[in-house]
Structure formats: C-alpha cells, structure tokens
Amino acid sequence: MKGTLLVKQLVLSALALSLLGSCSQGEQAASAKKPPPVKVKVTTLESATVNDSAEYVANLVSRRSVSLKPRVEGQVTQISVKPGEAVAAGTPILLIDPRKQQATVGSASATVEVAIANSANARATLKSYEADLLQKQADLKLKQTQYKRYRELAAQGATSRDTLDQFANNLAASKAQVGVTRAQIQAQKAVIASNDRVVQQNQASTQEQAVELQYYNITAPFEGSVGDIPVKVGDFVDTSTQLVTITQNNPLEVNLAISVDRAPDVKPGTSVELLDAQGKVVGTSKVFFIASAVDSTNQSVLIKSLYNNTQNKLRASQFVRARVIWSKRPGLLIPTAAISRIAGQTFVFVAQPGEQPDKLVAKQRLVKLGNIEGNNYQVLDGLKPGEKIVTSGLLSLRDNAEIAPEA
Image 1 (cartoon, one colour):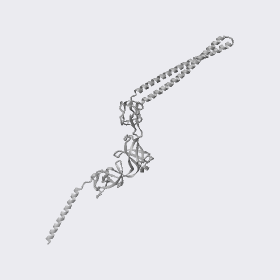
Image 2: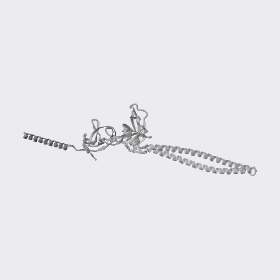
Image 3: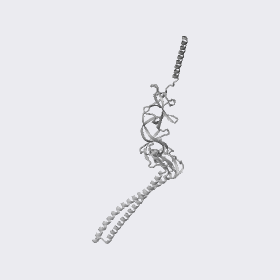
Image 4: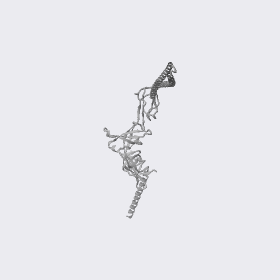
C-alpha cells in the first residue's frame, strides 16, 4: 500500500515539473517574439495663436491696364519686345514707318527758317529806316532854323521874298521827307509783325508735326508686362488696330465675395492671405473696400484688398485661394504629418507611459480638426497643451505599440 502511494507521488511530481518547464518555455518563446519599439519622432504640444478664418476663391485685378492703339497709320517696321516681357515706362514697343512724317517735319522746319530769315531782314530794314529818320529829323531842324532866320530878315527888308520862299520850300520838303520815312517805319513794323506771326504759325506747325512724329514710335506708358502682340512686322495698321496690351502686375487688387453672414466681421485693414495650390501662404494683403450693397444673385458681399506683388509671383486675371482672417485666438496647432485618417475620422498617436514607467507607448486618439494653416491643422478637440504626439512612422504603429522617441 505504501509502495503504491509512493509511485503516485512520484508521477504527480514529474507531471508538475513537466508543466512548469512547459510554461517557462512558453514565456521565453513569447518574450522572444515581442517586436522591438518603433522609432518615431515626438513633438510636445504648445499653445499657439490660431486664426478664425475662411477660404474663398479670389480674382486678381490689375489697377492699370491699357490696350495700345496707334494714333497714326502706316506699316510696322520693328517690334522691340516679346509677349510676357516686363517693361519699364518709356520702353520702345513697336515702330511704324516714320519716313514720310520725318520729311514733313523737315519741310516744316525749313519753312520756319525761311520765316525767321525774312523777319530778321525786316528788322534790319527797320533799323535802316530809323537811322534815316534821325538824319532827316536833324536836317528838318536845320531847315526850321534857317527858315526862321530868313523870315526875320525878310521882315526887316534885309533879304528878298524869293530867298524866303526858297527856304520855306526847303523846310516843307524836309518835313515831307520826315513824314515819308515815318510812314516807311510804320509799314516796316507791320511787316515785322506779320513775319513774326508767320514764324509763330510755322513753329507751331513744326512742333505739331514733330509731336505726331513721336506717335510712330509706340512706347510703354507705364511699368508692366507685355501681353499678346497680334500684329507682325510688315502689317499695315491704323488708328483702330490693337497693337499690344500692357498690364501692371504690382500692386494687384484681390476681389472676392464673402457670405452675407460674415460681412459684419470684415473691416478695412482685415488681413487676407493668398495661398498657392498646396495651401502655402504666398502673400498677405489688407482689405480697403467693402461693398455697401449685397449681390442679390448669390447673397454675397464684394470686398477688395491690395496685394503688393513685388516679386511678380502672381498675375492679373489669375484666380487664387484667399483666406480671410476674421480674428486670432489662442489654440493648438499640430503638424499634418501627425494625422492619420480612418473611415473618415482623424486620429493622432499620443506618446504615454506604458505598463513599465520607463517605456512609452503610442495611444491612438480621435481628434477634431479645424482649418489648415500652412503645414499645420488647428485642433478643436481631443488634445491639450503639454501632451506629446508622434509625428513620424505612423504607418508602422498600432494602438498601444511601444515606441522609442528619436533625439
């Protein structure tokens, strides 16, 4: 009986040892299969200033744009620019054959020179008449003195009546000569005045023709970009022909329509950010115009801002994304790289202590996001400042996966 009990005890002991060995091997196998921590980058969330904003499609409008047409007609002999080229004010754009007009200006200039020469000759003649008048006036004075003397002598009977009559005739002739010369001077002054008028008229005509000559050289009226050039060298153009369009791309008006319910939130000076296709801010403008009336077709309000396009990143008539910044407030921003999307919902992995305090695990958490700002999203719910989120290696993570933050 005792032998039987001893055998049973030995069997039970062997089974127990076998079970213990089996459990130990299972634990070792499980430990051997446990994946290593996933190396990730971790960012600590900090409070930031976020924008209360809305995005719209805006149209960029040039404040200065002109379609150049000639003031004269003729054949195009030269085109000095190319479409799309940036030009400064006064840059030559196109030349219309000016040879006929140059000849007209030359002829008019010659006419002016002839008129000026005639006027100079008339003035020289006037000076001659004036000198002659002085001489004749001196002679008249002498004749007057002689006549007076002989009149007194005749009264005393000291000279004959014939002698007195002779001096009287000499005096009368001298007076007549002075009168003739004075008349010549007046007539010559009239000739000079007429010549001066001719000179002025010819000079005005020449100036007019010279101004018209400038019309054959088409230049840029202001700094801008050259548009399409529909004409080519050799074409005949007239005053109705469109030659080229010059558009100034700096500054640009940003025109956009906002919803009526947001109209009270916009004011002069409100910031409007212009975005590229990737959502990156390419520039900022300020609102300067708010329409007083509502567009009844779509219940919107037109606003305009002014963008200084100094680097020519944008062009007139271009459509761009525009973000109107209604206000700013404190909040959270997280990188777009930290976001994963599952079944239409957005999640992030939050780095938290695991079962072992010295180990970190990634806890998947549902978050609610707002607008995107550059490479970040606004966080509306689900996170708070001070928490750590994973920003890399998301595809290698699962909920509660052990992680190893990289330095």
